[in-house]
Image (cartoon, rainbow, N blue to C red; front, side, top):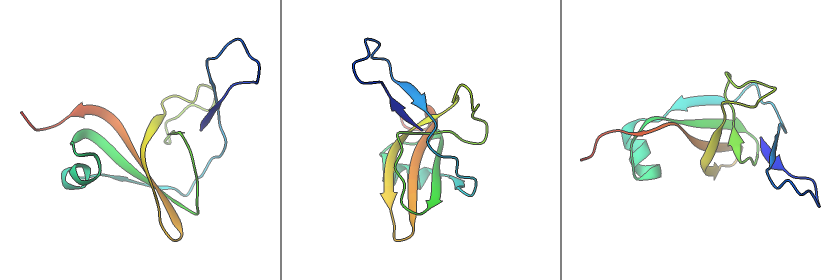
Length: 100
């Protein structure tokens, strides 16, 4: 989903707007090694959302997202474009794991 604010609006708070529902996205948990490679840190829950085709987004909601509130949704931390697919990297639980 993306955010938008009407031009000339005095209320600058962006309203979330659902742009597209993609039912065939593949969502995979990221292991500790992959998280270190991508983020440089290990989180309690990080995932890769893989979608066929080329897409852009600011946030992603998973199967448990409400269509009226758009919650919960997750900020996209990284986007990777491949020949026929887009990978969005999201952090679901920001609690860091391991380290000192």
